[in-house]
Image (cartoon, rainbow, N blue to C red; front, side):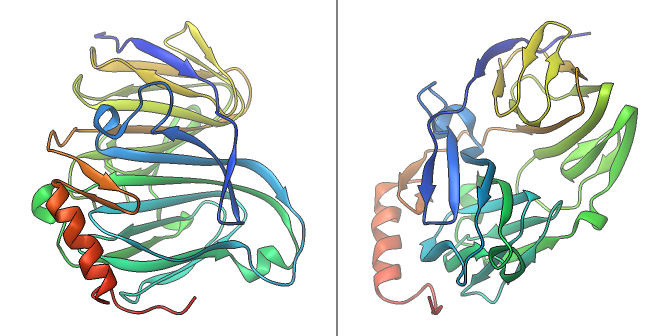
Length: 290
C-alpha cells in the first residue's frame, strides 16, 4: 500500500455570512496556505455547517452577481436552496441533491433559500465549491447540471456506502460531467464502517467531515466540521467511522495554469480580468432580475 500521508487537520475558521442566507466557514482559500494555487482545481470551499434559520416570510440568500472562468458546485446536506441564472439554468435542490453550474464565459446568478424551507425554517447545511476551468474552456458556453440524489450512483463498502458525485470510485462513474479529472464523493458510514480510496499522488486531495468522526489511515482522528489535507505523496488512504459519519472527499488533478482572480472572476491573466469587468459592465452576461 502506497499510503498518502496526512499534512494537516484544519479546524473550521470563524463563520461569516455570504448574503444573509449562508453562514459559512471558509476552508479554501484559508489561513493554512490553502490558496487557489495550492488546492487547484478546487479554488474555493465554503462550508455552511449545521445552522438553524428561523421561519421567515421572504427568502434569505445572495442576490444577483456575476461569475466567469470556473464552476460552482453546491451540495445540499440539510435544507433546500433555489438557483436561477442568466443562461436559463435553475431549479431547487433538496437534501442529498447537487447543483453544478458552469459559469464559463459568464453568467449572472442568484441563490436563496427555497420557499418550502424559509417558510418553515430549520437546519441548513451545505457545501459550496468553486472548481477551476482549464484555460481552453474558460470562455465556453455556460451550462447547468441539476443532479438529484436518486441519480447519484452508490457503491457499497463495509458498513456503509460511497456516493459518486463526480469522477470514479471502484469503477463506478459519477453523475456529473467535468472538464478535468475531479473526484467528488460522499462517504456515508455507520459506526465501524470502513472505506479505502486511491488517487494519483499529484492530485490535490482533502476530506471534510460533515457529520460524525472518522479515523484516517488508522491514525488520525478527524472530528465533525474539520478538514483533512493530504500531502502530494502516495496514493492510498483509508477512513473508518468511529460513529455514524458523513465525509466529503475531494481529489482533483491540478491544472497547473496561471491563475488571475478578482472577486467573482477567475481567469489566467489580468487582462482577461479587465475584459470580464468590461463585458459585465456592458451587459454581456445577460440579464436576471434580483
